[in-house]
Length: 202
Length: 239
Image 1 (cartoon, rainbow over the protein chains, first blue to last red):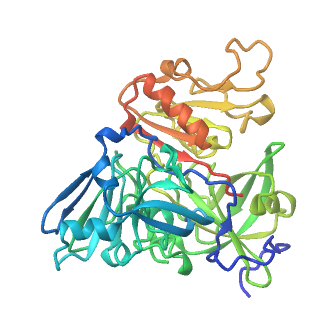
Image 2 (image 1 turned 180 degrees about the horizontal axis):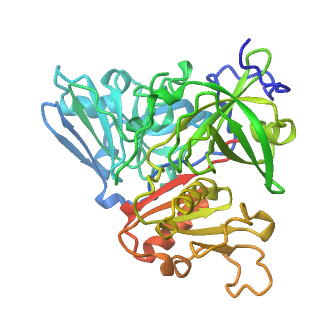
């Protein structure tokens, strides 16, 4: 086989089947990676807006979004920098509920998730509908800390975690794909960890 | 804030040859690699390095380029040896000159500096690596005055590139132990450390652990740097 590294055997022992290829289990660590300064966002001025190709642009305040039906994700998350965390829980609201309230127009095919910091990331609409994406404010039963995107972040856990925008402020519905921050910087437009879609061209 | 695009053609895996190694500190070693299909990088970019076991198991990590961009077809990657680091321990304990290592890159646009405008660079520990590429490029190109570099190190034993850093462009602060005669008390970075280095209007690049990055960002904002001029690269415990 090409590319075998002399002397390398690796440390995998009974590799957990929940780990996608090239990922390792971060166990108790939850590494922090973002490109901007960590912001300070107060919940009494926090809002979340669904806009673009929708029947009615809709904005929720911190209280209003908490009045929506709650939804939990229990499972794993995978960062492109090769760590994964297994068996987490996140509580918040399903993106389906938010999109249904705004009424997605049939022409919409993609979304851009936007953050209060200006961070953006692009996703096919199909990757944030059908119970695959959430806006969450609790992680493992505790309020999401600022460094992990609190007070609220997106999670799209079946894709690499840069798609799960920290400090999320809204979703913009589009009829085309429009690259976000990391995608313009060479990262993959979709980011499926199971096929290692790390960089453009993977 | 502008970013430089990653060149898609650069993202193929290639077999690099280790030409030489150099210990920067007891826990940091620089590997000089010869690339068969080299593309000039931009200071601040990184490569992904992949190790493959005979049964196909792989482990990969990202390492910043420490050397200035050039056309030599060679790059320096400086690797910190982490406790239980599957990749970094292998690189330190097993790899010797003549070995081949699979890499791809250069990658990264937002933390890259094109070398054409003043910058303030703030690095903690191994976070100095991509910043060193910027300082080396500025010195080599005859524009060292574009760069102001502040390095935070725990002790003199932990300072990377200790023989090369000193100069009018660089300042070192110590967090745990300082050389004799150092006026500044040991301690983490504060606004007083960065304020004398801020010119106004420049981009600022911060690189280090999450804790260092947040402390440095807070200090910079207190010193008057607009938050949207600060680019941050945080090193996680990624082995």
